View 1: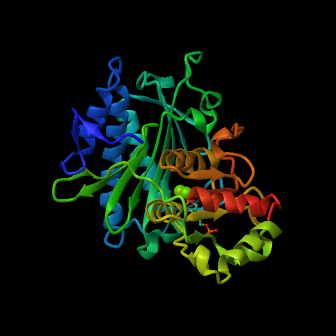
View 2: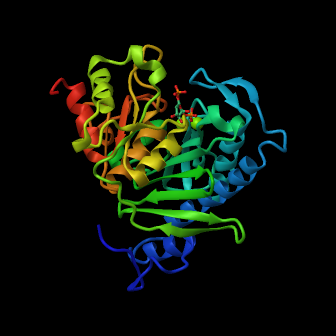
View 3: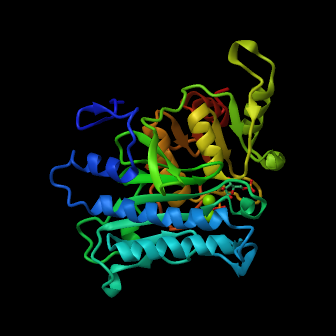
Length: 345
Ligand SMILES: O=P(O)(O)OC[C@H]1O[C@](O)(COP(=O)(O)O)[C@@H](O)[C@@H]1O
Ligand SMILES: [Mg+2]
Ligand SMILES: [Mg+2]
């Protein structure tokens, strides 16, 4: 992983805003039109507005549900709907996005079809991740995945969006926690920016994030233990055994917001697992706007992501809202779980 330079100078001890960083990165691509930079700017603007509303969640009437059930059979939280609308509005206004796929909308949303911009980017969104935590003041997030509209498509269709994760041009998330951070990759490493509320700017605070190869933290909803497959049960027992040499027993941490559990493990080392369960035989998390973007980020940070057997980024999607089992995090931990799942241990 190359050291981050801006105009030839090391950047770690410099005050760099997200916008400045994006423009610096853009200058490395002489033929770039700036469209991608503008798209990232639009996403960061929507993130600031969603952040503002989440911080006031208890004060204004955005608590509770909309009363509507989304395509996943989940009762939609008001903040799910608010975040969805905010990102759609920002992407429409920006004009660089031609199609949106969102957890909160059954069909893909074409933008250019009715002449609202001739953008060439497709954005997949989990507008608010960790919805079950939003009313109890626990950190939540937003996840985004970006593809280019393939040249052979004049108009954006769902088919054009169903590309394997390996085709992503960028992916990122925003975590609305003790501070608000935006973390993203364009395939040149992973960088984190912290929102400085006093100036309303995302500032480069975590350049070149690398996930530790080993980890001692596992994140899984053990309430589903009885419906886990045998290999996974054996891995969890192994992780809980006493063994100083390998630092076991490992620690369990489960916030119940994928973004927050993932972010902690990215910085400290660890693994997040949402396997197939009786309730969710294909797993719970969605491939296009949860598993794929985080898999791109974790691989760019030196980690690993699979469904226990296949690399997440190689899965060819068939449906916008399809689910997948997910094992993601420190490389060694994910490989170990795969060995247990594949009966090699
Ligand atoms: O309550 P469970 O079954 O453990 O599921 C929690 C998981 O579901 C999610 O909330 C699903 O995401 P959404 O909140 O975006 O629907 C993840 O963030 C989280 O890790
Ligand atoms: Mg989610
Ligand atoms: Mg969500």
